[in-house]
Image (cartoon, rainbow, N blue to C red; front, side):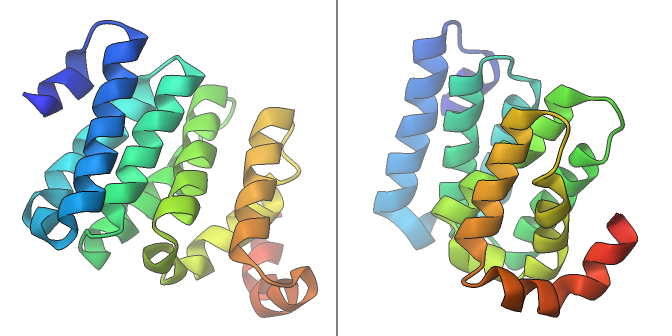
Length: 166
C-alpha cells in the first residue's frame, strides 16, 4: 500500500509524506530492506521521473537515495545509468532535471554506493555544470562539489572521460 501511495497518492502532502516515511523506514531497518530494495527503487524512480512538482521530485529522489544505500550494487549502477541516459535526452528539460536531482540525492544519501560509479557520474556532472538551464547546472555543480575533494585532482583523473562528452 505504501508503493501505491507513491504511484498514485493524491496531493503533494501525501506523496512527500510517503517518500519521507520510506526514508525513515530505510534508516531504521537498513539491511532488512535489501530484498525489497529493487522494487522500491524502481517505484521511486518512476514516480520521480513523472513528477511535475519540484518538492515532490526531490523527496522521492531522496527516498530513492536512502534505499540505494542498502541496495545491491547492480541496482545502483542501473539507476546511475538511467539518470545519465535521462540527462542526454536532447531538449527534454524535465528529464535533465530528473537526472540532476536523482544524482544529487544519491550523492547526499548514498555516497558510498555512488563512489563505485564515479567514473560514470563525475565526467557527466562536470560537463552538466555548464548546462543551458541554470537550475540543472546548479544541481550538477553541487553533485560535482560534493563528490570531489579537489577540482584539479578530479579533472586529472577523469579528463579522458570528460573530453569525449564535450
